[in-house]
Image (cartoon, rainbow, N blue to C red):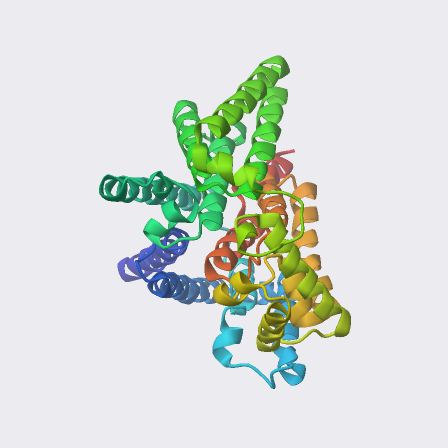
Length: 427
């Protein structure tokens, strides 16, 4: 190979892997204006997309897109969302409103077409995201500390008060922390290749990120964290044949969680105000179950009227706000709340047909993860399924870009999938 050909190959791959890591890192990087961070992430995804297309063309792998059933499901979902333009209750929508869903069209196609990404590069991408998450949380704590010295208000260390120091929703920053914990523990204790993370570092980092999750006070994410930790500890104990140690660790985690709940006043208050009761005005604005009951029942009432095709991308939001107005749901109107449930959100926008396609994307990925023993994929899909019960996860770029970027990455290029395939070839 000639010198200039070697240089071209190096530059092509360097740009490609830079775009891959940058796409992961910029999911976290936020500016004071949230739109700026979205633009930054969009440019990183553009860099990755262009370089990936060049890589795919160079390797002659474009035809792999059309042989991927999972990409076809994603394409079908995007197409159905686009078709709702013709029956959108508001009369239509703009290209910008459809734009965010283009990730369903582009990211799975890119991941399907490009040559297999080496396990080491996938691991670097995951660990770059873990490092970014850690840095962002440290900056949030420092900025909160500085604000606390000025105001004396301890709430700056909790929930949205903490996460908004970097312009990120507390729920999504909590999700990032849980994903980071999952990957740290996986690469330190479960991954069968050369372990890229020292066990001690993984444990210390996981404890720190778990503490941040408690400060962020998202009840659903705390529940997801606890379930994943129990599963991981039991699974690792099973692999190491030390189940009794796993049980002791789980009990220690449970005790630590109860102590944290007792010692963190804002989190304790958040838990105490969460009750299963009917929303009755401003006094229930911090009762997540009560306000979600209004959002969910409003969405279901609308779905009942147009169950097949939904109201369209723009029409769904308008009709939901009208329902809030009928019910004097002031916080919903002021904050322009969506459904806070992705399954209802999808049905409201695109009907039962859209919901079935959306669920087929997720169930197909979950089944693939289980069948191929693709641990990272299966765990992330389960994480996403749970989060989508209380959040409209594809209506915000930070939710859509994070989950579907990494789900697509793990679906086609998971390092444990590569190891399993290598084992099969050696048999």
